[in-house]
Amino acid sequence: MVFEFVSEGINGKISKLVIYCETHLHNFYNLGFGDKDETTGEIDDEVVTNNGDSEKVLATVASTLYTFTDKFPQAMVFAIGSTKARTRLYRLGISNNVEEIEEDFEVFGLVDKNWQPFEKQTEFEAFLVKRKKK
Image (tube, rainbow, N blue to C red; front, top):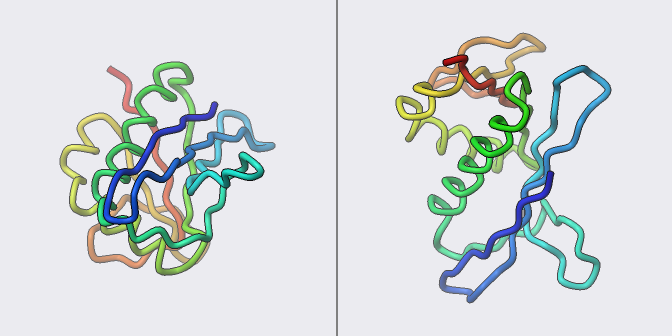
């Protein structure tokens, strides 16, 4: 599934993409996120936009999880930043909203090849979320 939205900020309007890709593991999906390359239509997860609306952008990306897991309720969604700085940004975004997120999702972080429940102060290598059953 592909979601497209527009970031509006100090550098103008920038198209963003969120892509959920199935992996070789059953019910395990990778979340890809970045700017839309206007020439190729592909995702660019390495460009630095600095559009001044990162919290709004991360909230929009998070909102796609609801739509995706409504369609695939058993899905486990994996996310990692393209750089350590991006992974840290994702951790901060999760940390700032963890109480709200954990109302609907189980959240895990990867440390030394082990998944553990998300903790705000832990430097994780990647993240995994799963929709809670209602």
